[in-house]
Image (tube, each protein chain N blue to C red):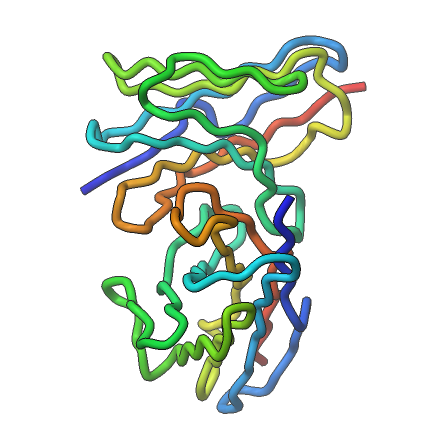
Length: 117
Length: 111
């Protein structure tokens, strides 16, 4: 099956700093990747769609200047949480569809636990 | 808007018994549904999927049933094992490159 990796798996930072999270598709190319966040004991909430070669599409209520997304290549998307605050602490998960022609079946990365002190 | 919800937030079963996890959805236009398993501190893991032109699909020890009339989806796990303990999410493809997740059901397998 398709493999998606994330780095780092866990990060702790001070309030006001920026944190970059990488999402890579290891054995396939992905023109589209998705970023989710998940609070404890809650479901996944889609934040944005990362598009290779064009701007990301953000869901309603997600600040694009706060959560910067760059889809640098067909195998890498990055999410940068700028000027992080404690309320940004969450589990961030990326996903990518295994078929470039379809976004139906998405494979998820292992997630990144962000803790902002 | 669309909503995908689960009837039961928690489910405890004895090892070896069958498990049934239910999900309701509201967008009748959705044509693709997926079940994911999420263990603590990990990303969701694909289990099985089904398209709206089917009402049943079987995998290894798992079966997904789709009832479009009442907009209901279920996941059946046969001979549940301790390793099946996790949170299970149903997800709905709304057609706009979006997966919309349900609230999740925590399955606990009692040895």
